Length: 95
Image (cartoon, rainbow, N blue to C red; front, side):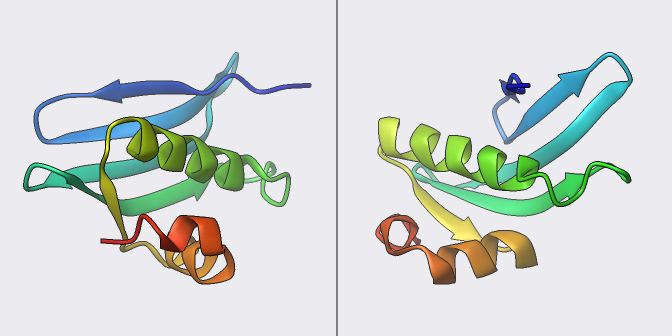
């Protein structure tokens, strides 16, 4: 089943998340640093849902969001940091 990804943001931070009828399955949060950098500070998948690629899909969505808005990403959280090391496309956006 394809999971819907939602995005909320305010002046200082934002979150990409996957809602379900039992709450949030997975989320990736970030805060804004300066005018054009978002810092991914946390990625979490709820217990029982790990290993299904949800966090990777959220990171993909965050990367697309950064590309569309001419932003750079500082992958502070360990998950994002590892994914950035593994993916050449992501590295182009690294702050």
